[in-house]
Length: 263
Ligand SMILES: NC(=O)c1ccc[n+]([C@@H]2O[C@H](COP(=O)([O-])OP(=O)(O)OC[C@H]3O[C@@H](n4cnc5c(N)ncnc54)[C@H](OP(=O)(O)O)[C@@H]3O)[C@@H](O)[C@H]2O)c1
Image 1 (cartoon, rainbow, N blue to C red):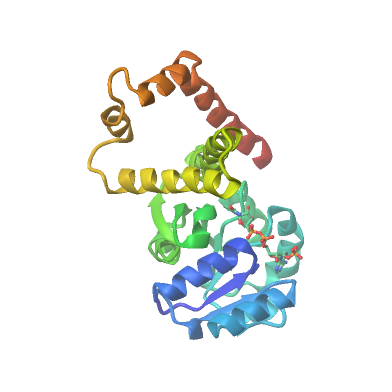
Image 2 (cartoon, rainbow, N blue to C red):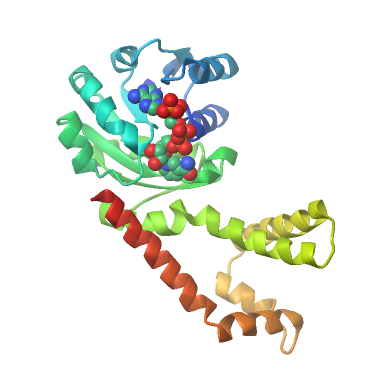
Protein backbone atom coordinates (compact mmCIF):
# COMPACT_ATOMS: atom_id res chain seq x y z
CA UNK A 1 0.00 0.00 0.00
CA UNK A 2 1.50 3.31 -1.09
CA UNK A 3 -0.76 5.66 0.84
CA UNK A 4 0.38 7.06 4.15
CA UNK A 5 -1.94 6.20 7.03
CA UNK A 6 -2.47 8.39 10.07
CA UNK A 7 -3.91 6.62 13.10
CA UNK A 8 -5.83 8.83 15.52
CA UNK A 9 -6.40 6.89 18.74
CA UNK A 10 -3.94 4.19 19.73
CA UNK A 11 -6.22 2.24 22.08
CA UNK A 12 -7.47 -1.35 21.79
CA UNK A 13 -8.70 -1.15 18.22
CA UNK A 14 -6.25 1.35 16.73
CA UNK A 15 -3.26 -0.63 17.94
CA UNK A 16 -4.78 -3.98 16.85
CA UNK A 17 -5.45 -2.69 13.31
CA UNK A 18 -1.99 -1.17 13.09
CA UNK A 19 -0.29 -4.35 14.28
CA UNK A 20 -2.29 -6.47 11.83
CA UNK A 21 -1.36 -4.30 8.86
CA UNK A 22 2.32 -4.46 9.70
CA UNK A 23 2.36 -8.19 10.44
CA UNK A 24 0.70 -8.97 7.12
CA UNK A 25 2.96 -6.47 5.36
CA UNK A 26 -0.01 -4.56 3.97
CA UNK A 27 1.92 -1.37 4.57
CA UNK A 28 5.46 -0.63 5.71
CA UNK A 29 6.13 1.02 9.06
CA UNK A 30 7.55 4.06 7.28
CA UNK A 31 4.08 4.83 5.90
CA UNK A 32 2.36 5.04 9.29
CA UNK A 33 2.03 7.91 11.73
CA UNK A 34 0.23 7.58 15.07
CA UNK A 35 -1.31 10.09 17.42
CA UNK A 36 -3.08 9.55 20.74
CA UNK A 37 -4.14 12.08 23.38
CA UNK A 38 -2.20 9.90 25.79
CA UNK A 39 1.36 10.28 24.51
CA UNK A 40 2.49 7.09 26.29
CA UNK A 41 0.19 5.02 24.04
CA UNK A 42 1.55 6.36 20.76
CA UNK A 43 5.10 6.22 22.17
CA UNK A 44 4.63 2.55 22.97
CA UNK A 45 3.44 1.79 19.42
CA UNK A 46 6.22 3.86 17.91
CA UNK A 47 8.84 1.99 19.93
CA UNK A 48 7.37 -1.45 19.30
CA UNK A 49 6.63 -1.13 15.58
CA UNK A 50 9.07 1.63 14.50
CA UNK A 51 6.26 3.84 13.22
CA UNK A 52 6.32 7.64 13.38
CA UNK A 53 4.61 9.33 16.29
CA UNK A 54 2.89 12.69 15.93
CA UNK A 55 3.23 15.30 18.69
CA UNK A 56 -0.02 16.94 17.69
CA UNK A 57 -3.10 16.04 15.70
CA UNK A 58 -2.16 18.60 13.01
CA UNK A 59 0.93 16.54 12.11
CA UNK A 60 -1.26 13.53 11.31
CA UNK A 61 -3.40 15.56 8.91
CA UNK A 62 -0.31 17.13 7.36
CA UNK A 63 1.48 13.85 6.79
CA UNK A 64 -1.14 11.27 5.89
CA UNK A 65 -3.31 10.40 2.89
CA UNK A 66 -5.80 8.38 4.94
CA UNK A 67 -6.83 9.27 8.48
CA UNK A 68 -7.99 6.23 10.45
CA UNK A 69 -10.21 7.36 13.27
CA UNK A 70 -10.09 4.99 16.25
CA UNK A 71 -11.26 7.24 19.08
CA UNK A 72 -14.35 6.71 21.24
CA UNK A 73 -17.65 8.04 19.86
CA UNK A 74 -18.01 10.49 22.76
CA UNK A 75 -14.72 12.17 21.76
CA UNK A 76 -15.79 12.76 18.16
CA UNK A 77 -17.44 16.17 18.52
CA UNK A 78 -14.39 17.74 20.12
CA UNK A 79 -12.12 16.01 17.59
CA UNK A 80 -14.20 17.31 14.65
CA UNK A 81 -14.21 20.87 15.95
CA UNK A 82 -10.43 20.75 16.30
CA UNK A 83 -9.66 19.18 12.92
CA UNK A 84 -12.38 20.23 10.45
CA UNK A 85 -10.11 22.82 8.84
CA UNK A 86 -7.07 20.56 8.70
CA UNK A 87 -8.35 18.18 6.00
CA UNK A 88 -6.40 18.45 2.77
CA UNK A 89 -7.69 17.90 -0.76
CA UNK A 90 -7.74 14.17 -1.63
CA UNK A 91 -7.37 13.11 1.99
CA UNK A 92 -9.99 10.62 3.18
CA UNK A 93 -11.22 9.16 6.43
CA UNK A 94 -11.78 5.64 7.69
CA UNK A 95 -13.94 5.64 10.80
CA UNK A 96 -14.52 2.71 13.14
CA UNK A 97 -16.70 4.74 15.52
CA UNK A 98 -19.73 2.69 16.51
CA UNK A 99 -23.03 4.40 15.71
CA UNK A 100 -21.60 7.23 13.61
CA UNK A 101 -23.05 7.34 10.12
CA UNK A 102 -21.09 8.58 7.14
CA UNK A 103 -23.50 11.53 6.79
CA UNK A 104 -22.94 12.47 10.42
CA UNK A 105 -19.16 12.42 9.99
CA UNK A 106 -19.38 14.53 6.83
CA UNK A 107 -21.73 16.96 8.58
CA UNK A 108 -19.03 17.61 11.16
CA UNK A 109 -15.92 17.24 9.01
CA UNK A 110 -17.04 18.69 5.67
CA UNK A 111 -17.08 17.19 2.18
CA UNK A 112 -14.56 14.43 2.60
CA UNK A 113 -14.61 10.79 1.38
CA UNK A 114 -15.47 8.52 4.29
CA UNK A 115 -15.36 4.76 4.69
CA UNK A 116 -17.13 3.41 7.72
CA UNK A 117 -15.99 0.12 9.21
CA UNK A 118 -17.30 -2.09 11.98
CA UNK A 119 -14.54 -4.38 13.21
CA UNK A 120 -14.80 -6.50 16.35
CA UNK A 121 -12.68 -7.58 19.28
CA UNK A 122 -11.17 -10.39 17.18
CA UNK A 123 -8.89 -7.70 15.74
CA UNK A 124 -6.71 -8.16 18.82
CA UNK A 125 -5.67 -11.60 17.55
CA UNK A 126 -5.93 -10.91 13.82
CA UNK A 127 -9.41 -12.49 13.69
CA UNK A 128 -11.80 -9.57 13.38
CA UNK A 129 -14.92 -9.77 11.29
CA UNK A 130 -15.00 -6.31 9.75
CA UNK A 131 -17.81 -4.89 7.65
CA UNK A 132 -17.05 -1.86 5.48
CA UNK A 133 -19.21 0.61 3.61
CA UNK A 134 -18.87 4.03 2.04
CA UNK A 135 -16.98 5.85 -0.67
CA UNK A 136 -16.79 3.49 -3.67
CA UNK A 137 -13.51 5.04 -4.73
CA UNK A 138 -11.90 4.15 -1.39
CA UNK A 139 -13.49 0.83 -0.44
CA UNK A 140 -10.86 -1.45 -1.97
CA UNK A 141 -8.08 0.23 0.00
CA UNK A 142 -10.15 0.23 3.19
CA UNK A 143 -10.73 -3.51 2.73
CA UNK A 144 -6.99 -4.00 2.44
CA UNK A 145 -6.42 -2.14 5.72
CA UNK A 146 -8.82 -4.40 7.62
CA UNK A 147 -7.62 -7.61 5.97
CA UNK A 148 -4.62 -7.11 8.24
CA UNK A 149 -6.74 -7.99 11.25
CA UNK A 150 -9.13 -10.63 9.86
CA UNK A 151 -11.93 -11.14 7.38
CA UNK A 152 -13.68 -8.25 5.61
CA UNK A 153 -17.00 -7.92 3.79
CA UNK A 154 -18.80 -5.01 2.14
CA UNK A 155 -22.41 -4.29 3.05
CA UNK A 156 -24.66 -1.24 2.56
CA UNK A 157 -24.69 1.19 5.47
CA UNK A 158 -28.36 0.45 6.18
CA UNK A 159 -27.21 -2.98 7.47
CA UNK A 160 -24.91 -1.54 10.13
CA UNK A 161 -27.29 -1.79 13.09
CA UNK A 162 -27.75 -5.49 12.35
CA UNK A 163 -24.03 -5.93 11.74
CA UNK A 164 -23.43 -4.39 15.16
CA UNK A 165 -25.88 -6.90 16.66
CA UNK A 166 -24.30 -9.93 14.97
CA UNK A 167 -20.56 -9.40 14.61
CA UNK A 168 -19.88 -6.17 16.54
CA UNK A 169 -21.34 -7.40 19.83
CA UNK A 170 -20.91 -11.06 18.79
CA UNK A 171 -17.75 -11.95 20.73
CA UNK A 172 -19.62 -11.32 24.00
CA UNK A 173 -22.24 -13.97 23.16
CA UNK A 174 -19.51 -16.58 22.74
CA UNK A 175 -17.88 -15.43 26.00
CA UNK A 176 -21.22 -15.87 27.73
CA UNK A 177 -21.63 -19.41 26.45
CA UNK A 178 -18.12 -20.33 27.58
CA UNK A 179 -18.80 -18.65 30.92
CA UNK A 180 -21.91 -20.80 31.42
CA UNK A 181 -20.09 -24.00 30.45
CA UNK A 182 -17.20 -23.35 32.82
CA UNK A 183 -19.65 -22.38 35.59
CA UNK A 184 -21.25 -25.80 35.27
CA UNK A 185 -17.84 -27.54 35.44
CA UNK A 186 -16.92 -25.42 38.48
CA UNK A 187 -20.16 -26.40 40.22
CA UNK A 188 -19.28 -30.02 39.53
CA UNK A 189 -16.06 -29.46 41.51
CA UNK A 190 -13.51 -29.12 38.70
CA UNK A 191 -10.53 -26.85 39.42
CA UNK A 192 -11.19 -23.33 38.06
CA UNK A 193 -8.40 -23.42 35.48
CA UNK A 194 -9.60 -26.78 34.17
CA UNK A 195 -13.21 -25.56 33.98
CA UNK A 196 -12.08 -22.56 31.92
CA UNK A 197 -9.88 -24.67 29.65
CA UNK A 198 -12.69 -27.14 28.97
CA UNK A 199 -14.97 -24.32 27.85
CA UNK A 200 -12.47 -22.25 25.86
CA UNK A 201 -10.74 -25.12 24.06
CA UNK A 202 -14.15 -26.58 23.17
CA UNK A 203 -15.22 -23.22 21.76
CA UNK A 204 -11.99 -22.91 19.79
CA UNK A 205 -12.29 -26.42 18.35
CA UNK A 206 -15.92 -25.90 17.34
CA UNK A 207 -15.13 -22.58 15.68
CA UNK A 208 -12.21 -24.05 13.72
CA UNK A 209 -14.28 -27.05 12.61
CA UNK A 210 -17.06 -24.70 11.43
CA UNK A 211 -14.56 -22.42 9.69
CA UNK A 212 -12.94 -25.32 7.80
CA UNK A 213 -16.14 -27.17 7.03
CA UNK A 214 -17.95 -27.32 3.72
CA UNK A 215 -21.30 -27.82 5.46
CA UNK A 216 -23.41 -25.33 7.43
CA UNK A 217 -23.36 -24.88 11.22
CA UNK A 218 -26.82 -26.37 11.34
CA UNK A 219 -25.64 -29.51 9.50
CA UNK A 220 -22.59 -29.79 11.75
CA UNK A 221 -24.84 -29.63 14.81
CA UNK A 222 -27.04 -32.39 13.42
CA UNK A 223 -23.98 -34.50 12.57
CA UNK A 224 -22.74 -34.44 16.18
CA UNK A 225 -26.19 -35.06 17.70
CA UNK A 226 -26.80 -38.80 17.86
CA UNK A 227 -30.34 -39.96 18.44
CA UNK A 228 -31.08 -40.38 22.15
CA UNK A 229 -27.52 -39.33 22.98
CA UNK A 230 -26.14 -36.78 25.46
CA UNK A 231 -25.94 -33.86 23.01
CA UNK A 232 -29.54 -34.46 21.99
CA UNK A 233 -30.57 -34.40 25.65
CA UNK A 234 -28.99 -30.96 26.08
CA UNK A 235 -30.29 -29.52 22.83
CA UNK A 236 -33.80 -30.78 23.55
CA UNK A 237 -33.85 -28.71 26.76
CA UNK A 238 -32.62 -25.64 24.86
CA UNK A 239 -35.21 -26.10 22.13
CA UNK A 240 -38.07 -26.87 24.51
CA UNK A 241 -37.27 -23.68 26.42
CA UNK A 242 -37.10 -21.74 23.15
CA UNK A 243 -33.46 -20.80 23.33
CA UNK A 244 -33.48 -20.09 19.57
CA UNK A 245 -36.30 -17.61 19.90
CA UNK A 246 -34.74 -15.98 22.98
CA UNK A 247 -31.45 -15.58 21.14
CA UNK A 248 -33.15 -14.00 18.12
CA UNK A 249 -34.85 -11.47 20.47
CA UNK A 250 -31.47 -10.71 22.01
CA UNK A 251 -30.01 -9.91 18.58
CA UNK A 252 -33.04 -7.76 17.77
CA UNK A 253 -32.54 -5.85 21.03
CA UNK A 254 -28.89 -5.17 20.15
CA UNK A 255 -29.86 -3.92 16.70
CA UNK A 256 -32.60 -1.71 18.16
CA UNK A 257 -30.17 -0.29 20.71
CA UNK A 258 -27.68 0.48 17.96
CA UNK A 259 -30.42 2.39 16.12
CA UNK A 260 -31.29 4.34 19.28
CA UNK A 261 -27.65 5.23 19.97
CA UNK A 262 -27.30 6.51 16.42
CA UNK A 263 -30.05 9.06 17.09
N1 LIG B 1 -13.54 -2.37 21.16
C1 LIG B 1 -14.30 -2.98 20.26
O1 LIG B 1 -14.57 -4.19 20.29
C2 LIG B 1 -14.85 -2.18 19.10
C3 LIG B 1 -15.51 -2.82 18.03
C4 LIG B 1 -15.95 -2.05 16.95
C5 LIG B 1 -15.75 -0.68 16.93
N2 LIG B 1 -15.14 -0.09 18.00
C6 LIG B 1 -14.94 1.36 17.97
O2 LIG B 1 -13.55 1.60 18.02
C7 LIG B 1 -13.31 2.87 18.59
C8 LIG B 1 -12.13 2.77 19.52
O3 LIG B 1 -12.40 1.84 20.55
P1 LIG B 1 -11.24 1.34 21.52
O4 LIG B 1 -11.80 0.21 22.30
O5 LIG B 1 -9.97 1.15 20.75
O6 LIG B 1 -11.08 2.65 22.45
P2 LIG B 1 -9.87 3.06 23.41
O7 LIG B 1 -9.06 1.86 23.79
O8 LIG B 1 -10.43 3.94 24.48
O9 LIG B 1 -8.93 3.95 22.45
C9 LIG B 1 -9.23 5.25 22.05
C10 LIG B 1 -7.99 6.09 22.28
O10 LIG B 1 -8.16 7.34 21.61
C11 LIG B 1 -7.74 8.40 22.49
N3 LIG B 1 -8.36 9.66 22.08
C12 LIG B 1 -9.55 10.20 22.43
N4 LIG B 1 -9.74 11.38 21.78
C13 LIG B 1 -8.66 11.57 21.01
C14 LIG B 1 -8.26 12.60 20.09
N5 LIG B 1 -9.02 13.67 19.86
N6 LIG B 1 -7.07 12.47 19.48
C15 LIG B 1 -6.28 11.40 19.71
N7 LIG B 1 -6.59 10.40 20.56
C16 LIG B 1 -7.76 10.47 21.20
C17 LIG B 1 -8.20 7.90 23.84
O11 LIG B 1 -7.58 8.64 24.89
P3 LIG B 1 -8.44 8.83 26.29
O12 LIG B 1 -8.52 7.46 26.87
O13 LIG B 1 -7.64 9.80 27.06
O14 LIG B 1 -9.78 9.36 25.88
C18 LIG B 1 -7.76 6.43 23.78
O15 LIG B 1 -6.40 6.31 24.08
C19 LIG B 1 -14.61 3.29 19.26
O16 LIG B 1 -15.19 4.35 18.53
C20 LIG B 1 -15.53 2.09 19.17
O17 LIG B 1 -16.85 2.46 18.92
C21 LIG B 1 -14.66 -0.80 19.05
